[in-house]
Length: 473
Image (tube, rainbow, N blue to C red; front, side):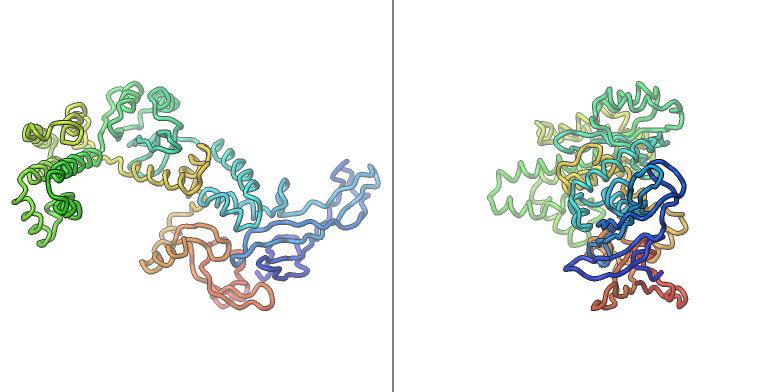
């Protein structure tokens, strides 16, 4: 395709580079055959031109402005005047439909301000189009119940928001504005067929368990192992910090620098690490006790059966010395958790599911929130749920594209911010490929850019197809 505008029915008259912006003069060649006011066929005559400026999606990293020579028509029947309908142009915005689609895609991946900067429009325009698009997505979206349900929360804008996921398939299902029991219960009650759910993975927030039991009587509830082993590490760290206060400052700083030795599993340390750790533990018996309590708690999850795990748990609880059961900065919080959530902890050995994906998604939500302060809850929810919706392709195509990605390619794309060098949009790294891009206007040179599939399709030349090349224009 050699037409840089690539809009059906449009003819490019002239193109030039105006500062840092492409200016394309064009006209729409298809005239209306009936009056847009009264509907009478025929009886139209031209009533002078009407210049219109239209925004298009970026090309080669530059803004694009179309100077359209629109025609005005007058109806002999009703006397009404109107501008010819322009194909490929959004009805409410002076933008190409392609530009609106670009905004819709990127508003879920990039900040509104940055999308506006790439196009050369006001960020209020982006917010308006994004709001309409998100409203449409929400109306079409139907949450579902998976076999293995994950429920967790993350703090956004000073408020804890409940996040629901399909932990087996690692897919987000919904984000709720709060995490209280009535809201979670109402969300679960909305589904008529709840028999599909086999188990629930949660953290130690009792309203989640109570809500699930009211909706799914007898449903297995599993406490994610990572919540508990993290508590074991935190308890060990708390003991180390407390003991360090009784040491000289230099010793305390040395302990802090070497704390990674304590946090790692002994079996994962190399020979040097084991030697250094053993020297430390031999000289500090209280640190050694805290470390062995941490290690033996991890060993519970290495048990082959639930019965064996239960025995190890009971033995571990008895092994905690009295001086490490005092206050929150000790092993007391973990002892309390393993007492109150014993059944849910041991349920892991019957149903070894993890809420790790939900935890990871919580981190993603926080990153989204930091990247664009002031987002409404609806925008945050949409970015979490629908961010990758547009890139859905047949599995075979996705597998083929992903197979091309190498560590070097990943590193390069990370340096580029995973951005297409033509439209500046954010994409998955495996979607960006290197192509030759020919000049748009005189004075430019052929460049090799990493392009998204849309930019590649838009500027792929007929000659390139004939030579099985990836040249673009």
